[in-house]
Image (cartoon, rainbow, N blue to C red; front, top):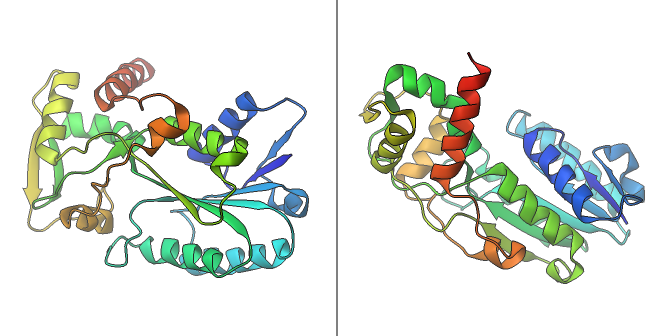
Length: 255
């Protein structure tokens, strides 16, 4: 069994590490798409850093290369993929999903909540400003850690009964979402300084992607499922616990 993961970014690295911990050491796990013809399981993560048209072209080439081969294809994307979702990559997610559905490839779709790691990335700036800035009236957002997503993806990839049905779909989320007032209160407790939610009419995308914020304002980022627990047999990491531990580590690294 050979696993091929197209991403070397943080989530891709975590998926690689989790798969490596769950399978025999003789089983190959690689990020090289050059070896795709020899792969048994292809794990594909769309990129938020790469041009959409370029990704579509590369994906079409990928489908040609695996046509007629017995492979398990796993598409991993943010759950901001509804037909009415204004998130800039929503259309890409929808395109990739429908191309797989129209193909003869055995595929699994794994959708996940907003990665909580994004909060940690911005936490020092939030502390400096004392505010969470965003457009007016953002509804609840469901956050889940990249490590939890990676664990679930690895379990699905390595357990045949979890991916044997074509088009099988999973939604990986925490048990609940947070609105910005709740998130500001949570960060205040962790940072031990007052953090307020500052909705703005004229919002400039800085640290938060504007189109994703628009999706949140429509209530499209508050999907909830218990698929994570069903797949892994455990609860996902509590947001408070994750941010608190990450913040302490961030402070140590920035001393």
